[in-house]
Length: 454
Image (cartoon, rainbow, N blue to C red; front, top):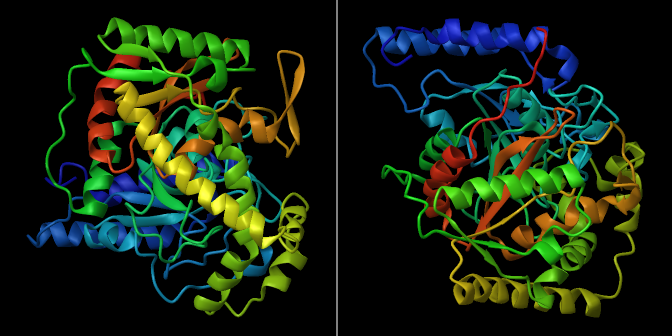
């Protein structure tokens, strides 16, 4: 594209054509093809005029509809904000657009980012490209579905409690939840007070995530895949693999075997009791801060919409969560959880240090993508397991301790569903984790693309 061998307009038209033919995925809330084509034509004009081209020249990138965009509405997936037009782009988008990326619409999501299914009451359910009857995960389900289906090269999501990592695993792609605070979150509706919310990318390769990271952060040094020999990958099978679906368990064991064969050392290092409290701590703090965080965003962004209006118009799957936020519990318990969160953050750093672990490896969820809907529990090996355990348990430590978290495809179930493997590294170790991700990705090998008749 930079050389002109592939005009930006040609590439944009190919993606837009695929998006139209795969509308049944319902990956987008808003997509205006004429705007994308006009931006691509402008990119081609800059190239033919001999002007300097940005590092993302001509790449159409979808953005989760919880991330502010000046050119398109930002609904956060909820009816009350369906027509909200932000005054400015979110901070994370500015360096991307400065490097000549093109906004390719807004992706569908779980309403208010408050869930793991992307079964949206206003815009309809997002479909999993590997099985249209199943969820793509959430809350960044539209972003993941678009990337997995080949509609876009990379998409922007947001992860408070697994909202990048779960869709990455369910849709068979790579997803990065960076160290908390690595990317700016201004212009993104928060669910907490600067504790858990973090924007990040979903892509089909680690190399593309590295490019995105370098553009947003300005860290330009080249990353090379290090040898896996000597790399220490920690596992906690008695906790992080407890109650796992047998097929997922098989895939995890086979994936760890591949990494071991490639030279990595698999170190059993069970999580101490304090780190196992991460899920409860995240739940409690989010419950206490949720409504105040949303109300603050509505006011700061001058949306013209009140919190009561958002709650009144919310869909049935999220309204109970919002109503529950009206009675979050005593402030003493909240303050105790804030102290516990700090203790968990310190203990997580000590855990990596004492076991000399480069990354903790585990399945982000206990099962593959399940049928569409918003169940309170899912069936795993004939047992009903609460969704907050099946999905929320394993991903909670990364959110609670603000770790660098990378999900990669690990394999496929007998039913043709992808399963991911998550690698968590100490906070601040993002570039090292991404370099390691190049080697992990190579050792794990590719998985089949979804079979979509377009």
